[in-house]
Amino acid sequence: MTEQTVFHLGVNLSDLEGATMAIIPGDPARVEKIAALMDSPKFLASHREYTLFLGKLDGQSVVVCSTGIGGPSTSIAVEELAQLGVRTFLRVGTTGAIQPHINVGDIIVTTGSVRLDGASLHFAPMEFPAVSDFDVTTVMKQAADESGAAVHTGVTASSDTFYPGQERYDTFSGRVRRHFQGSMEEWQAMGVLNFEMESATLLTMCASSGLKAGCVAGVIVNRTQKEIPNPESMAETEARSIKVVVESARKLLNA
Ligand SMILES: O=P(O)(O)O[C@H]1O[C@H](CO)[C@@H](O)[C@H]1O
Ligand SMILES: O=c1cc[nH]c(=O)[nH]1
Image (cartoon, rainbow, N blue to C red; front, side, top):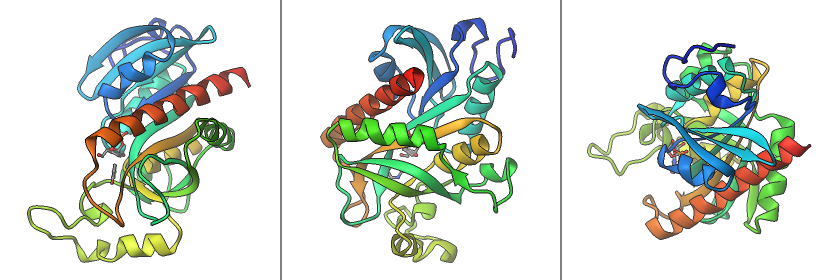
C-alpha cells in the first residue's frame, strides 16, 4: 500500500481513511448521489473520468469512485483502489435488458458475464470465468429484493462497444460487423439477461486477483422494445439501483 498519490485517481492511502470497500458506478455524476446516502460524504478528487467521494456507513469508510465507460478505465480504477487497500468492489450501473419479460425499472444482479471485452484478457485467459463473488451477489440480491423492485439474477453480456458489440443498427452507418450480426438473438437464446460494458473486466480481474466484486444494474431500456430510454424513468431507475448498492455495502460491512 502506498502513501503516494496513485497515478490516475489523485488520492492516497490516508484519503481513503481505511476503506476496504468501493462502490463503483460508471458515470462520474452518480458518485455524489451515492455518497449523499452515506454519513459524512466528502469530495476527494476528480480527474478524467474518475470522481471520488468518501462516506461512512455505520461508522466504516466506503469510497465511491466512477470508472468511466468500459473495461480499460475500469481496470485502472480497480487497480489503483486495490493499491490503496480496497478489496471489495460493488459496481452499480445502467443496463439494456434483452429478455422480453424484463421491464424498465427492474434490477439485474449479475452472476457472471460474457466476456465481450478486451481488457479482461490482460488479467486471465478466456477460459477463466467472469464470475461474481458469491457473498457479494447474495447480498445484492437480498438488498434488491428488499427494495421492492422486480429483480433478475443471471448472466450479463459485457461488451467493449455500445453500438456494434450490443448489435445496435441505429448508428450513422447502420453497419454491424458480421461477427456481431445475430448475436443479440443468440445471447437471448442462451438466457443472457442484459448488456452493459464493465462487468466482464471487473469480474475477471477481481476473481483472478483475490478481490471480491459484484454488479447490480437498473434497467433503463428493453432492447426487444426500443433503443432509446425515457429520461424520467431513467432517473428513477438510477435512484433505485443506488439505494440497492448502498444497502448492499451496509449489509456486507455488517456481515
Ligand atoms: O451507467 P453505467 O455505469 O455507465 O453503465 C452503462 O452505461 C454506459 C453506456 O451508456 C456503460 O458504462 C454501461 O455499462
Ligand atoms: O443498452 C444499454 C443501456 C445501458 N448501457 C449499456 O451498455 N447498454
